[in-house]
Length: 299
Image (cartoon, rainbow, N blue to C red; front, side):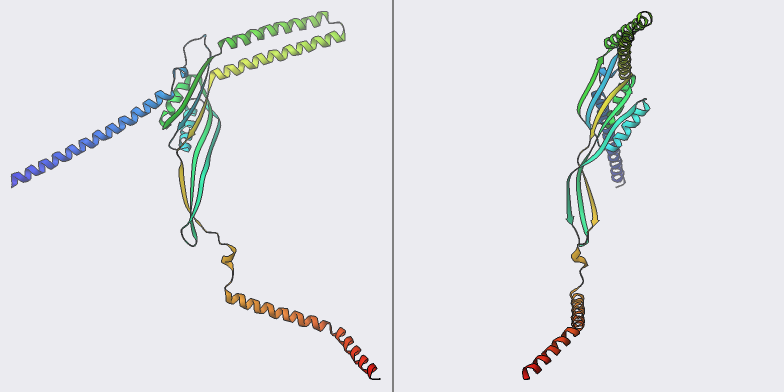
């Protein structure tokens, strides 16, 4: 018997050890699946176009447009904003809102109603991040992606456009200097000077525009623009609210209504009697008239 009990205890311990090992293996497999899912999401939303190239002759304007589903829009929004801030970027636009699709009320008691609301939450975010950190920011956001709908990443080379604007700026400056020199040396008549000054003003305006265009392009090169559209699955909110009583709920009972009617009738009678009493002079005249008429007819 002792040998049998020891054998049973050994089998029990062996079974427990096997169960623990299986649970540990399942936990590791789940963790590996989560890690692989995060890695897959990171590789999906990232792109070679989002990586800074070590080429001095290239000037890329990088933009990214992504639409993806998240578990909680509000929490993902805060996480993404923190990621952008840590990488030297900033948010220029955010539109977090809830859209109600259906709303119903179910009366559950005399004074309570169950209010059910079906709604979705979404957010459109526009952010600017340093060009060198675009790929890092996109990979950091991968953990928030539950399902990726679309991803568009563009890298436009604007080096030639920058060079063209710079050359145009130099030509305009040179032409402006020649005009100014001509005004100083050859401008004699007022009309000639006025026309020349107008031309100088036009050239100055064009010069400023080329400078602003280059500054705008350089800003787009330095900071990439990312537009995100986040959404989550439809949510249901249920609340128990108090019923609002209608006017009938405040009506008095029948006994009180009868008593009020009797009082109103009595007050009406008093009013009629008082009105009749006010006409005593008219009744007196009518009575005297009748008496006079009778006496006159007897004679």
